[in-house]
Structure formats: C-alpha cells, structure tokens
Length: 103
Image 1 (cartoon, rainbow, N blue to C red):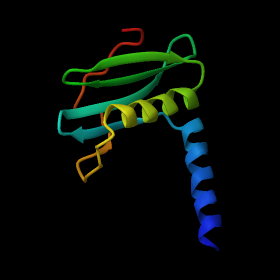
Image 2: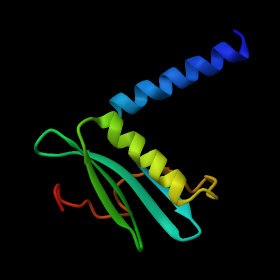
Image 3: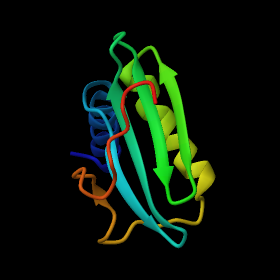
Image 4: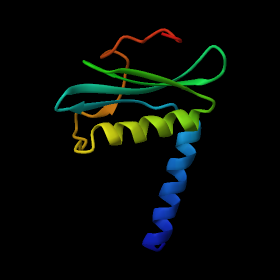
C-alpha cells in the first residue's frame, strides 16, 4: 500500500471515529490538566465541554461529530504549543467530577 493510500485510510478512520465515539480525553499542559469531553444531553443534542483549573467552557451541538470537532479545534487554538506526552490519555472520570447535563 502506498503512503498516500495509507494516509487517506487513516484519515477516513479518524473521521468515522469523530462521528461515532464521544471524546473524553485529558491533556496535561503547562497550565495543568485540561479535560475535553463530549456528552449526550437529555434532549438528544451533544454538549462539548473543556474544563480545567481555570476553564469551564460548554457549548451545545446537534451532532456528536460537531461536538468532537469543536473540542479538537478549540483545544488546538487554546494550546497551540501543546505536544502530548505519556501523561495525556483518555479520561477515566476520576480526575474530574462529571458535570450534570445542562450545568
């Protein structure tokens, strides 16, 4: 398989993941841990949350894909210098309290 074909296959898999799997990921930054989390609302929409020691952003979206894309793009703009290390990982829920839907 050519590199170009492999690249497009990996990108397609990433796009499908954005449509099907909610993001719950903790980035350990120089400003402390920051959690990115997409959760379903009671109304059937999706809530994208970014929170950390001095952050608590929340935005509603009609689709999971929109919420996930918002989280990734917003974090990239917020922390352009961040490079993940071994400490950055999927969130297990123990580092942060779960906020009630609509909070």
